[in-house]
Length: 50
Image (cartoon, rainbow, N blue to C red):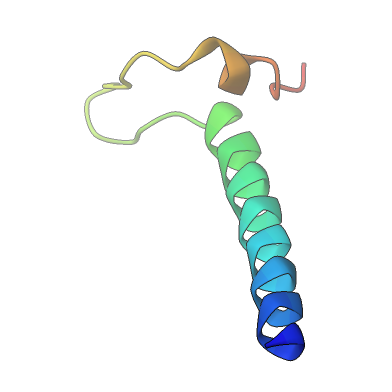
């Protein structure tokens, strides 16, 4: 059981990191289709780089 819990904890951290990186990338780009871009949550706006 210990190995399974350790694996799940590492997988959770990896998934959170990928989600954060994807959100940051999305915050710095726009949608190419007719300029449509839905409202972003405030937390994602903090990830913008200007």
